[in-house]
Length: 308
Ligand SMILES: [Zn+2]
Image (tube, rainbow, N blue to C red; front, side):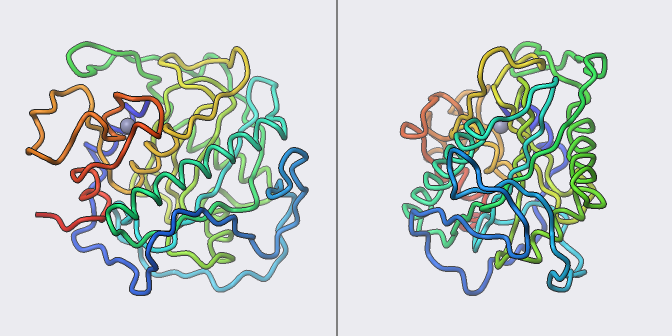
């Protein structure tokens, strides 16, 4: 997972020179709050009524802040809200049960990040929006072009245009729900929340290799996307079988959005002593979150430790 993310974050994602942590940030408490988005009409999820599917937005959000944003990764500090946009694909819709499972996995990923934050003494609190968004994304099979690119010490197959295609799909989906585009969706939702940062998980109902498109690469203010496929697969395509929403993938991709870089494919000795172990979540040597952790090297990248 996340090789695209690696390339993206390595080549283009650079942190702003002096990102400021929020002043009033509370310590992590290990809990993920499910927060309401005000002024939204929604339909309760039939499997988990803590969540509702977006139906429409009422006018009257707070003023849209036009302050210029730093181009780079935000710090994983303060109150961070996680939004979800589900894309129905290949004529198959996300069911309420599948969405409830994905939201449950997202909460587990958030709780794991908060527990790691407690270990590091980092002041971050994660919220999951009570409202999720669903729209159809008509994928034409011939749109998927495969490129061969170097991957560690060999070559790998990459869905060459995934980044452009998924950002466009997210925008079309936002349009279908009555927003101007995905930037409008992100802005209007954020204006109804009390959070420092809002990032989005895009869940295409297909198989593929998850990756991220940070704000600097979407080219849209406030649009920071983690594309998490319904099932991880090196080769993009239709889903055979049910979705599998993996909390470890969610955590890994979310950390990319805050500046964490991949640490697999190279020997551990490459890293300064004591900064990265085989347990680091960006190293991907274990599949279960319970075996993974955020080591000092990754903690530094996301703003949890001072940069030496
Ligand atoms: Zn990655």
